Image (cartoon, rainbow, N blue to C red; front, side, top):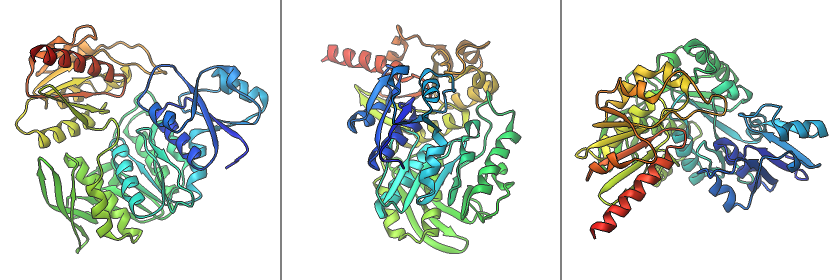
Length: 443
């Protein structure tokens, strides 16, 4: 790291970017950045650290800066273009992450789904037992001087993760997502295989994923799951309204009974992956047990609150498999309450490519509402609407508008789950306000 330079992050509020900015700040580097004015859930951590956030403007770029360019921005973005014109060093997000990887025992977490939750859990456990730096996709990051471990989320989008050469990689699953970039499942598998071949010590992969079973790597692959042919196996799984407990075996060796206060079958698997890494790094599994019990989850992944008589859950789920996992977790925690899903489709290409799967997953809820499709920087229109998806849903499918959230007021003593990767939280805030006003009027 260059301690004399100022690291200027273009797109500093991005989930990975804000985490990385916090890591460099914690390491003692001078950090600032730019982004849109609109409030995002990642900026609180930056503000608390005293990191300056400016609106995008070419005038922000000064001599003595190293530019860290967010993956969403091309070289023609005004600040990046100005920096290049001035001859300043411009680095891409993955290049900066790779610099940190080289300094520590690094553990990357990759997968179409579950990588943020697994990275967050692994970072929590490792931090409890040894000095650990981490980079989580919910906007949290921490740089620890003399860290033994570096835990980071490795994103497959546009093959960003092929910049990385970690010691270990956890692979939670391979699935076809990002249809605006990948040509199909074989293309996605090829990207994961590249990361596998660049991993230095070992890979921990979910054994029930047929694509992960086909992986070729130059290091051992240990499969985790619930089947007898897995290397790390969770047995005697007990799921209750307070969480899950299960026995863990490595081949025939009993490693202990572990408990988590997280919900859903996917969180049993995520926990199993963390136990597997800990075992190979010879970490005291008794300490791992203790750390697992104190993990509360990551931002925007099954975050819940109660307003009036309603439980409101906020979740980043934006793919059919994630929706299914979120609804499964909600059913475990609230078996006797009605589940109402409010889903904001994220990007037009994904909605078209996965429409039937979205309908199937959403129909697991008792009632479904949709909002209009949220575009992205790269894609702000398309030949599909939320109403098209709504027609395929048997449990409702009405499209809610921000100025009329009243249909949700018909439910009482139930669970409303707001899901999506866009700005679904603004709908949630309006609903919460309506609920609060109603309950005040009643009292």
